[in-house]
Amino acid sequence: MTRYVIREEDESSDVMVGTFIITMIVTVISFIAAVFVAFIAVGTIWGTFTCIKNYISGIVANGFQLGETISEAWNGNVDSMQYFFDTARDYDHILPALVKPFLVMAGVGVIIVGTALLPIWILIHSLFLLLLLPFNGVRRKDERPY
Image (cartoon, rainbow, N blue to C red; front, side, top):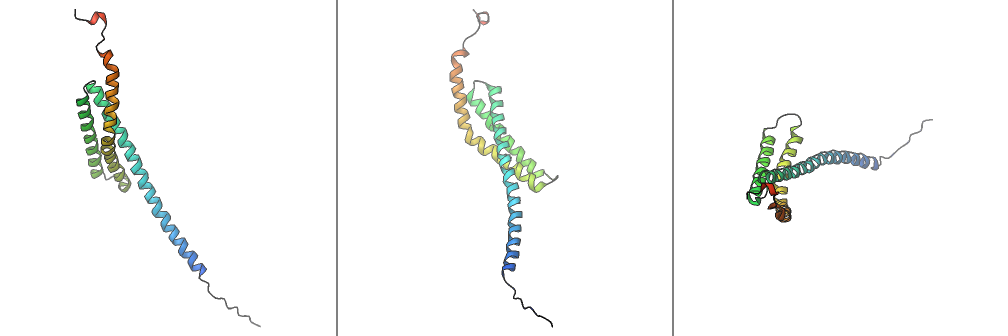
């Protein structure tokens, strides 16, 4: 005696396969987006450190001359930004799809963060100048010309 079992195809297995495929696609897209977001964040942080370095270089070069310090810091930021953009344009080594966004975001980070934080650095530098101003004119007795 032969038994025939008639089984109806339920749609839940099709839904599960579709859900699995959509989940895999979303996972891959999310991973790629996370890598780009990480490079953008690191580029912006790198740009911030470059801005700080440019301002400190301006302070070291010009000291108490606030206007020239600001000009040198701004010109350093523009030069750094242009360097990052030129490097991104000419980059053709390994993983250019990942490295180019990092370089571009480092350039954007330099100019945006540098522009946003420049008034704060000017204020901090001015406060240090005001605090050090009374001590600027004090010299040792053997250095006085009279």
